[in-house]
Image (tube, rainbow, N blue to C red; front, top):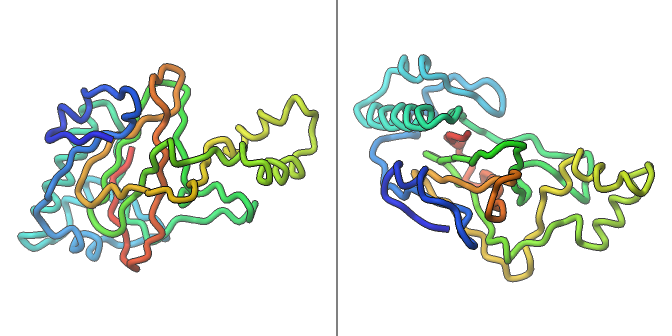
Length: 222
């Protein structure tokens, strides 16, 4: 990972070598919890549109937080991204395969057929974690897990790898013994490498937090 001090460097610094996560580290002003409290929640994940954000009646500290959110939305949009601002109480968990959950609480990488990056920032609540690639092992390469996946698959042998990809099993990792996940912190805007055909680095392994604090999470992602 590498840290920078402005948005221009965040989007222009190339990934190289083992560096597949770049963060614009910041100490943000304002009360982001006020925005979480004022938004009308609709389910486990509530998306806040620009218009709704602008219409919230906020204190001076809440207004400072809103200005930062609007600025980040504008910066990312001008860069060509499609940022989404969410209040997250919790994500749905994958119960289809108890021995191999494929939800975002599992360490995983993002994949795209075209060159792109993942941007994210936690403004309030528990933050995402990344895992150095040297400290993670692809789950489908773990013999006992691969054996269980074989039991799920009923097709021809030459279609097994496609089966793993179609069900996103090949995106998930298991932290090795002694691994040290890295918290991305609150207020920092991150750019993570994605698995795509033109990538020159390994994709960044990351996961969503378990919301252990009990607080809803305010997250911008694209």
